[in-house]
Image (cartoon, rainbow over all chains, first blue to last red; front, side, top):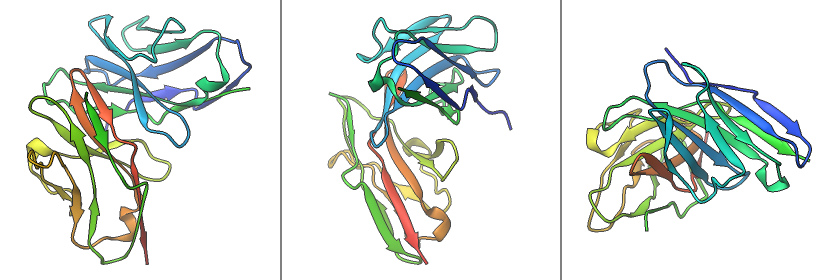
Length: 114
Length: 107
């Protein structure tokens, strides 16, 4: 069964460094998402991406963040100048174009900012 | 405002007992609601959605628009049901999640 895959599973970085989290969505899916879950808190929407552009973003998704689909398979989240409070689990998800399409999630990338 | 509230952080029951995980929502319009589950060391996955009116792994959930609720129920809990359960509301392109309830089913 096809799955969303994310790399790395865990990344440790120093405050102020740039981080790129990678995702390979399911191949026939058209909508892509990043969510974040800070330890002990809820799963928060960051951004959705469709047709090579951002379709919606949350207040969290400020200029520090960017997303890209550099080729036909990868979907990346870049976090510039990381802060301690960026430490979280980042989930990628994708879905088909169906109006009631289920979101399929990756296993997450844990980011630890020291 | 679009919001999902799960009032219980932890629900602990004995095997065979009934389970009800509460979810309330705030949404202007016709809501589309889901329950997602995350078993230990596994990814978030869809359990059920209200439009399907299905029963998955013995779980059911009924949308009550009057009470703005979408509680998840199972008549007889099993140990393998122990997991994090998230209620979610579709808002535009995205899902809005509640804070989750950890269900612990004791033997």
